[in-house]
Amino acid sequence: MLEVTDLKRATEGLRVGVTTTGAAQGMAQLTPLLRQSVTTLPGGGSHEIRVLTANLQPGDVTPRHSHRFPVTVCVYEGTFTLDLDGQPPIDIAAGQAFVEPPHVPMTGRNNGDIPTRMCLFYVCDPQSPFADPL
Image (cartoon, helix red, strand yellow):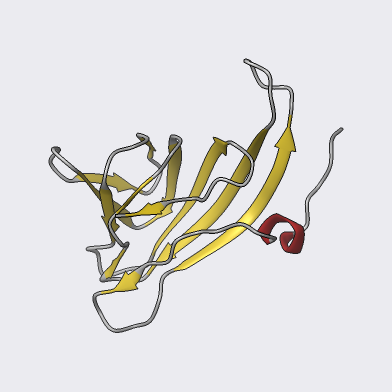
């Protein structure tokens, strides 16, 4: 069934991580936009499609974490720097996208002087957390 999901329903029971700021400006913002169960993906079974926005102020840094499923990051303002274990830092600039691999420890940050705004999209098992702290 096709449906539009309101924000309250999308956020019920959804555990998302928070980020801490390196510039003492408060917490970065994660806003769930969509959380919808589907049974029509290849492989069968039940999955959830989730879409969030993330806003990181200059100096914001995410806690060290990993994801259980690939997370697609689409940056539409600023630059998001991703530190994946064992890799050099990856800068994802406005107009670029990147798929964060599952089960890889990582930290993300905004090293710029303007806010970074992005959309996050992923498919997961029902009730899975967005991130696992490390």
